[in-house]
Image (cartoon, rainbow, N blue to C red):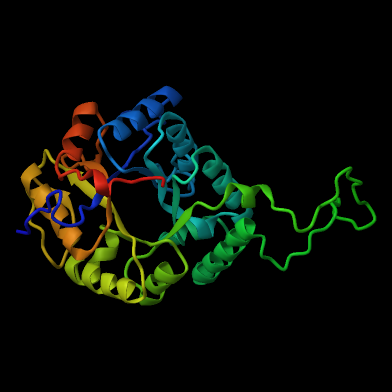
Length: 331
């Protein structure tokens, strides 16, 4: 087994928590409950709070989920230090302008703390339901990101016009016409960070290194292509060779109450094991080059997400040495 890193002996991987905002009955928690959960996660020393995203599908209970941005907004109001992020937001499935508006709004409420892990989404049915072409998912994703970045930079070939009602002859006479060249609200607020969610695609990993603020990998399905060791090692090399720095891994199931399951190199990477083994496995991720791990508390016996309690959150955070110098900072 790998030897766990200790404070003062190299980089200690930052631990984050995927905080589900559903209660035990499968319904969204209330505002105060979400706020209390966010405060707890920050108080015990986690570096970030993250939430996932799917578009709802009629009749599908697994994908009829709350809007993660609303949950993160509540978390933002209840905390002051932790990073707030999505893992991942299925950007290709939504309108880029609406998303950009939500992005700069959330950034304004939690300056320098917001990070969007974005991707195409891996579920073809969601694209079908949205009436979008699955075969163009990567093109649509790239087009969306170019547009979103232009909202924050103002660098665009779009000509700003007067408001109309769909007819050039029916212009709305505004008291304040558009002022070209002035910074917009989004430009004044500034852009949040964007991570590219991808499993193992070399072109996408190079995009993550050169066009995004980092790479967001997955501990689940993406590791099935030859197993976690092959996928993580080869992907990390491509990412680092392209100049990438920040590498996160999400969908990391953790269940410290379960018997230890073997970590087969040709399977997924998971933390379904006893606490001391979890510590050893986190050190493996550190040694592979990951800078951050986003944990998803899991109930192996019931094959469902585990409800967060103060004791569970504290226990999970204690499983890996905390080095204050490696904690998330807004500076």
